[in-house]
Amino acid sequence: MPWPEVTRMSQRLEFVSMASKEGSNLAKICRRFGISRKIGYKWLERYFLGGVRGLQDRSRRPQTSPSRTPDSMEEAVLAVRQEHTTWGGRKIKARLQALGWQDVPAASTITEILRRHGCLDPEESGKHKAWDRFEAEAPNGLWQMDFQGHFEAAEGRCHPLTILDDHSRYALGLQACADEKGTTVHRHLVSTFRRYGLPKRILVDNGSPWGSDGEHPFTPLTVWLMRQGVQVLHSRAYHPQTLGKDERFHRTLRAEVSQYCVGLDLEACQGRFESWREMYNFERPHESLEMATPASRYRPSLRSFQESLPLIEYGPEDQVRKVQQGGKISYGNREYGLPKAFCGQYVALRPTPQDGVMEVFFCNQKIMYVDLKNHSSKSVTHVPEHL
Image (cartoon, rainbow, N blue to C red; front, top):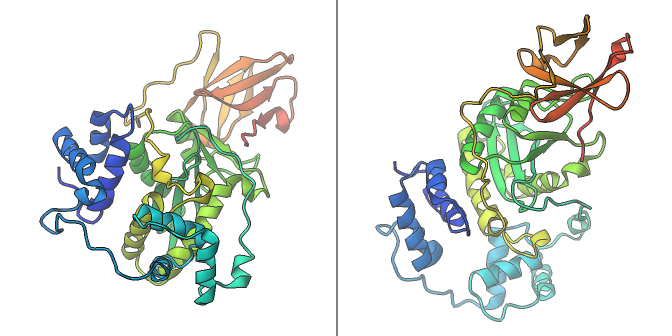
């Protein structure tokens, strides 16, 4: 199967980045990219012999390296800045080194060059403050997912959906959506899971379509994620810094690309998003990664997406109940209300050390407590899942 025309180069680069990692499963990665192993071996060989240039179509690109610009280092700094108008001294220094420049000046010197040429806004620079944040120990241990915030498109509005790997900051998904419905997110998550595999956990905020407060903690989307074996975590209310990496990613996305997409149709927005995502993952130095790129720290998950899910299996001592219409389950001649998102699913009740209190599990995730002694509407309580 040929590469999709629009994203051919970016897919080749992403493919070799993953396939060249130690211990990677080439056959599985080829299947996720929709190519044969023969094609996969061809692009790996070209990459090892010629680097990124080896991935270019030979009929369109010369085999010799392009000649170096004769401009001075200062002109080179300004050229990078012109291409990436939000980058500062440290990123430009790392990028010039990655491009092969020798004797690149210190980041502070580059900052002075930018200031001297009127490229820096002192008021804007003072707004940039680092988040205090945690970090997952390995790729795919935790993904962060959210909508950036909509803007006007040619018809309706564009809602950028972002999916970020917590450990590597690799942008797994950046999609121009027409809405923020659960079905829309589901569709794009399927494509992402097919490409990168499944994460252990996904962190989302407290709004639609992820679920919100104690009265609506689950949605069909989050139930489907748990069914795939992905634990769903919610950020703490009024604590946006819990999703700090994705919030920071949104700020960069807005500054570098989405503000220039206002008024475009969704297809045009998506084209710009894909080009920028490739640059972000493979070229843009990341300060929290010691100026490495996200692609250098990311590798695909070993857990493959399951197109057809097996039946849920619970232990022999579990009290298994099917959630009926309205979110009701029966136990001990009484009915208890669970979130309606679980309608039609099977849950398991397990006793706790506390007399009369049962835990309710869906797959491997504890979702509720049931107090058998409490006959009020508060007999069922949600298990909060936060970082």
